Amino acid sequence: METLLEYDGVFLAGMPADNEVLIDYVNRGGNVYLAGGTRRSKYPRDAETWATFLSAFSLAYEYSPNRIEGTLPLETTTHPIFNQVEQLYQRNGNSIRNLNPNNGHSFIIGRGENGSGLYAVYNGGSILP
Image (tube, rainbow, N blue to C red; front, side, top):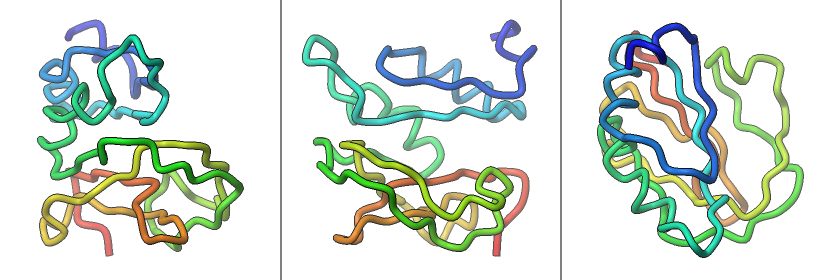
């Protein structure tokens, strides 16, 4: 855990990591980028692998890749991670659900044509408009 605190953020995709360590890291000010839908068949599904981590922040992955592909517009947001980003490329990620849309800290900020959540942020320090 102490090693992670040396970094502002970590990027995860494809390989499991200790969910409890990541929860502690975020609660202590760290940032995590988690890419879903990147699993090869020999690994457990991302929805199961990241369930503990995501649910700690009122989020969850759907259980299968969404088969959405293309460059998609990003919803307007004040979150700095998407500052001046108008569109992102998406290919077969896991859709995201907000388990408690009224919590004021977890937000779906990008959706596919079918309404499925493509990108989400958790902002524990302050409530976004």
